[in-house]
Every structure is written in C-alpha cells, then in structure tokens.
Image 1 (cartoon, rainbow, N blue to C red):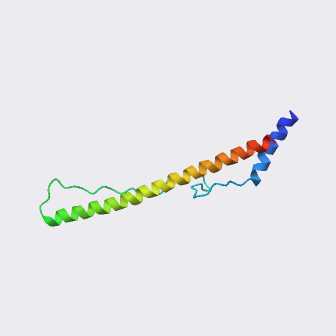
Image 2 (cartoon, rainbow, N blue to C red; image 1 turned 60 degrees about the horizontal axis):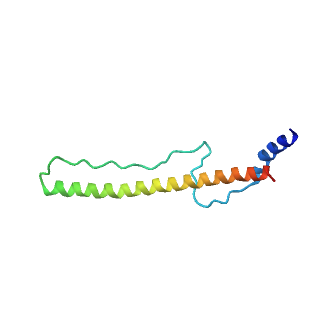
Length: 104
C-alpha cells in the first residue's frame, strides 16, 4: 500500500519538472483547447445568365478572389491541425514521462 501511495505521489510531483521535446506551434490555451479561428470564404453567387461582358468579368473576378481566400482558409486549417497534432505529442510525452518516473 505504501509503495502504491509513493508511486502516486511521484507521478503527481515529478512531471512538473519534465519538459516536452516537441517542436512546432501549439493551440493550447489558458482556458482549454480552442476552436480554430479560420474564416471560411463564401462562394460567389452565380447568376442564371449573364447580360453583359462586365457581368462575366465581375463574376470571374469574384471567383478568383474566392479561390484565393479558399487557399488561405485551407492553409489556416492545415496549420491548426498541425499544431493540434504537436499538442497531442506533447501530452503523450508528459504521460510517458510520468509512467517512466513511476516505474523507476
């Protein structure tokens, strides 16, 4: 019983001095894990028919802008996911360090 209590105390005390070795960004915040803050673009409205070259050019311009914003959005989501995976690695390392300390 004493050995079990000592193991629990070691698990609780020693991980405080253990540092994760994961490199890269993190999403971990003070208030818990945040949602992403990426802004999803809205698709441009495509008219049923075009009445002039100006309407065609304007629509094509809107589509180009949308495509550019979509790429920015997808890059933002990719970065968020990469940071989330880094956080998972850090958490697993901390857990493994606690197990290693308890099993010394």
